[in-house]
Image 1: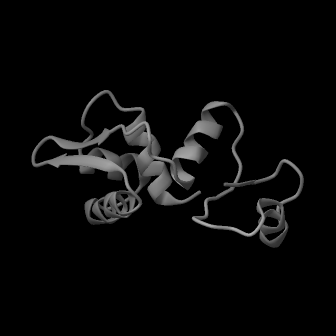
Image 2: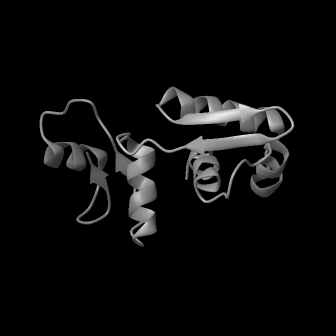
Image 3: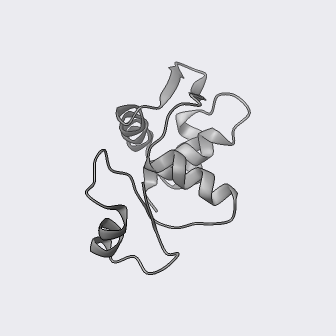
Length: 109
């Protein structure tokens, strides 16, 4: 599983802000690696507030759909699987075959 996804999952389940040190300790990362993954999440559209001496807090945008949000939703329903999220695709079925997904093994959106 992508480390940025693990950071997102931790922020998603937090009650408020989580310090970079705590995230790093829980995931075995340095604070600079945590910042790198927070930047990656921001780059795909997540709004994450970072406050000095407080931590990082995920702001929810109900209209944000990407591979991370789909994977979190699936995991919450007990269906962990790889997710391919593409802006455009000729055929989702063909893309699933190209990705090597077997039946009910992955999601192409």
